[in-house]
Amino acid sequence: MLRLNEIFKKKKKKEMKYPIDAVITNLDVALRSDFSPDGHFCSFTFIDERPTFPRVKKTLEQLKVNPDVHVVNHRYTWHEITKDTDLSCLEITKH
Image (tube, rainbow, N blue to C red; front, side, top):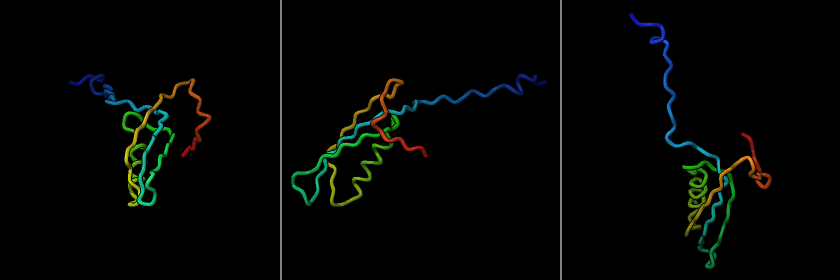
């Protein structure tokens, strides 16, 4: 016969392999276009998720959609958001 504690035993919580952290991300992109031989340099600052950085990937994909613009190189850095981080320079939109 089953005991009550065996019937109602708690399921173990699934542990996440990779914890998701919100970080401030700086994305620098070097672009080349057919209309400007000198090229362009763009810098973006936004909040993204570490370790996958989906917003960085989405931004690079959006830049590559236009056939007249070519991404030459890109680099991104990130900074952890702590209780002391100043977010006043960022525009926060709640969805």
